[in-house]
Image (cartoon, rainbow, N blue to C red; front, side, top):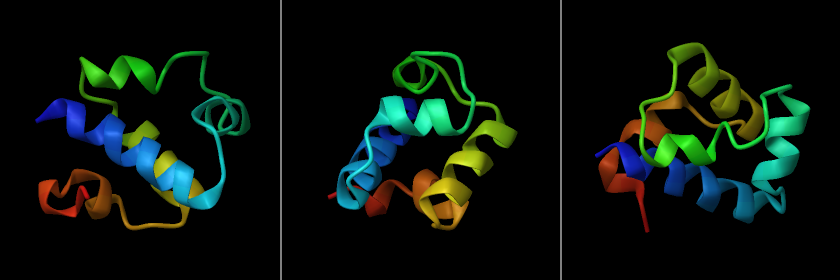
Amino acid sequence: GVRLIYFKIKEKCKERGVSIYRLEKDLKFSPSTVIKWKKSIPAADKLKAVADYLNIPIEELLDPEEVK
């Protein structure tokens, strides 16, 4: 469900050596924006921005099969 998106972002950040804090700062998100996605569905534009930032297709964040 919803929580998977947060954990996928966390995993992809770790793979790239980027903290979630750094991602939020670089994308000019307010602090803890991504952490709130544990409980809520992110807006499509924000999710797209994260996917672009991490250089992955947005589907990779949405596909439950992708989580290791």
